[in-house]
Image (tube, rainbow, N blue to C red; front, top):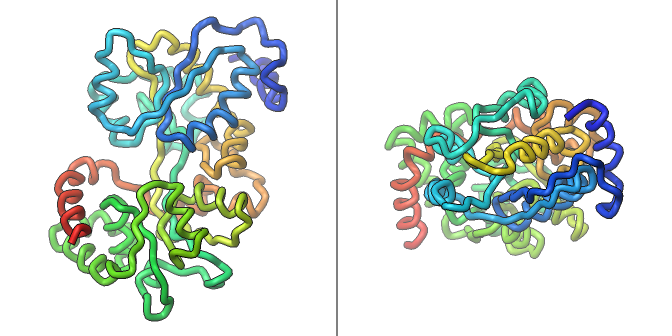
Length: 349
């Protein structure tokens, strides 16, 4: 996209979709597949609407539940309808290795130096930083708690919220037990470390309210069912704004991962998908996503000069990322089946 078109795109961000489209509109639909309905709505508002206003490209959206098997099935379909799909780190690595995705033309989407290094790979461009934090009600607990405090029900009585799944809970349990974030996965790589995490979970088990969806995580905090909970930072920030709640987000000891965009192999709209990535990689556009949903983008410069209240909740703010631990996709790829089985048996008794 030429510089003049880029500048025009920024200027047109506030223009309604009914505005006259430029001459380079494409007749092909672009199918964008995201992780869930809430992400889909945020992408629609922050990315799809302004992109369509600039290019007049018909964009369709869908959601999927994740999983490499679904990607394999889609890639083999006679008429693959997916062009651009949001994947996690494990899906990206396996899918790229198996040839399910196109290799990205970085010159066409701004160059690798335009983005945070963690967001760049052969087949993937970071779409957003998703962070699970310790969230709490500041009206009930004015001092920012740690994971050790989260486990201390004697000092801070009340229910605790945790995700009904093994990923994340073992990491938080070890940090609550005094393991430094940098040593968490080294500890979990041993059977003694896994046992240690489960023993720590045993201590909290009678006080846990389990949540299954991101919306539910924020809702049990807003309802007062729990004093503190693990939760996606974006959902808590959104709930705090719309429900006028005084929630806190503890990024120290948080767990973050980068969801990425990948273009399906053989996509008939691959060039338009590249243009979408170029457009949405502009800091001015990514800022719309942060403001609307609390999800953090990966373009360099996005977090420069943010208002303090927005910087405080931005998952991709350098200070917030430095305070957290990146989820080790390789560890979970190798260990998820057996640890999920153990967790499900533990949680069910």
